[in-house]
Image (tube, rainbow, N blue to C red):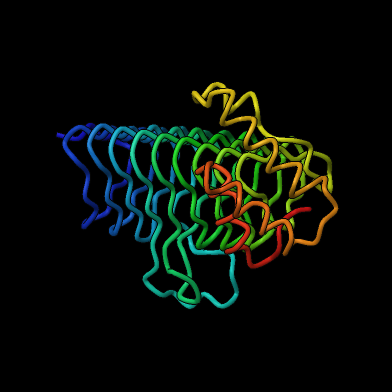
Length: 258
């Protein structure tokens, strides 16, 4: 049986796996589903059509599944879906999606999300990311696998951040950040690639060198983007990582940070 503190309120219709733990004064709404091994701390509110997978740890005072901060929202049955083994710290706020987009705000697996992080409606977060304190995603943002957001980072709505990118503390992101790139400063500028992060993830010297060459082509050559894409396409024939960068650039809608 789930272990539910006597002061917690679990509304009829909520689905909790047998090994779930719910702390004192937490409120769980009727459309919430929580997977095995997940722990919900004290004074949390889980509402809306919110699904958590297995072995998540939600710390006290988190708010998951509230209505989006979008004036167009009219109570549609949109969702928040959270995967497995995520750490979700104090005072985080994750909203459900909107009918104007996919209708689902989605967080993947194995993410480390620190205090006061806000993930707005329709955001799509991958796996193995780190969000430091007070990082904020506006609506419809996409954060791919292994991204690190420093404290107080702000990401503009509809922006995409590619896999393995590193965003320095306090940066404001108003354009897409390609995979592997490290950016910094208040109005974010590219500052190289996330070499240290790639080494920690097992990228060898040959792969990192190919990514560095691609970075120089994109950010330091001064060439028009059409010419940059041609060069990347040639390099992508021998480097899947360069291919990933090219694919990201090709599907960018806001333009890349450059």
